[in-house]
Length: 196
Image (tube, rainbow, N blue to C red):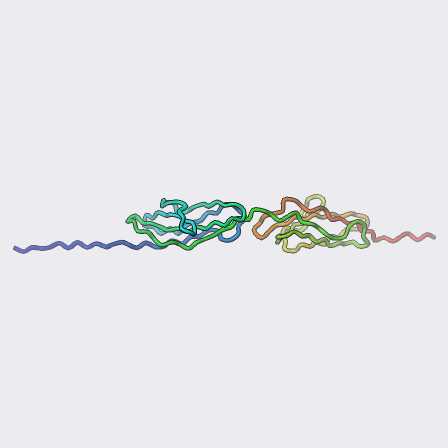
């Protein structure tokens, strides 16, 4: 009698890909940020951690998480994945963000004032931390939209007053709450009439 042994072959699955985390990084103009781990398949679940290893959210099927913070408080996040066999990946890259939700102070505006002997006048806006400036006229019409230039030159005609105000914006998009005071000038370019 001949006996035939059956040999069973098993493939031991002990490896899972490490996900990559994507989302905002650095200073942002929001108190919340959404991060996404790459979908590694394999019916994976994902757990999110702070940079020091503190668990933020335990393993779940969602590969996204939204983290909230407050102005100037940095938050960091990283992720690891687990497949349906229970294998756990290494940690992903770590991403950090810092909310900056406070706009620059109300700008000041400097330049000629009152009656001047020129048809044009240049005004300069200034606000700490500002990168962009917007200038508007008397009718709130934008005459120079968010530009890195903090100067504007206005032209007018004899006896016609022109006014301008400025608003500031920082690098991440926060705007000053208020406009500056107006800068204004009135050209007087006509000399006195000769008496005959």
